[in-house]
Length: 192
Image (cartoon, rainbow, N blue to C red; front, side, top):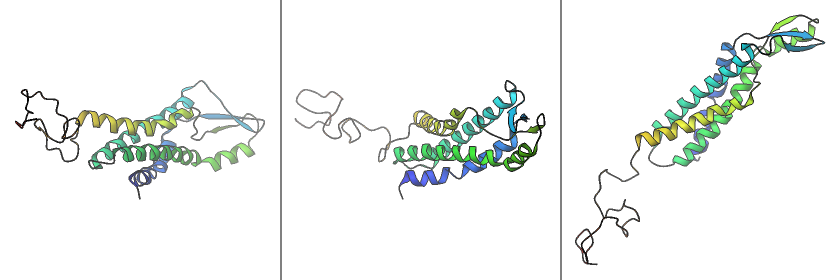
């Protein structure tokens, strides 16, 4: 299998775990049943915003961990495939987290709404109002990976560090050298 598929398959299963964490840490939101429909009792309160905020924080944390783990586990190649894998896996995991978290307690909630009378209240379940927070996981994963790449600056394959002029890792490979040489000679002393 290719690197991006393997990475996606590794990241994706963390979504349901994040969804369970989200469902068990959301603030309580009260719904009022009116004409058989649950309506948020206080739509401007902290509860609905807190539910979306918790999901965003969990997605950010999971994304950062995935990006750091991918960077630490990678070799000196397949960067693009690894980045695609953590992005695709982050999207899938985020969607699974949302759906899993939403299903926790959904049966009881639907039962209370179905059998409730007008004016009855019920504690809500995890559900996203701001769907934009679904991108926090993949964006944080790719950003963490990229930031580590910039800060750590790993050497390319085969590079042993400080090379002199004329080595194969210079711009243009063996043919182009940016260091000036005496007239008629290259930097290695050969005549040109």
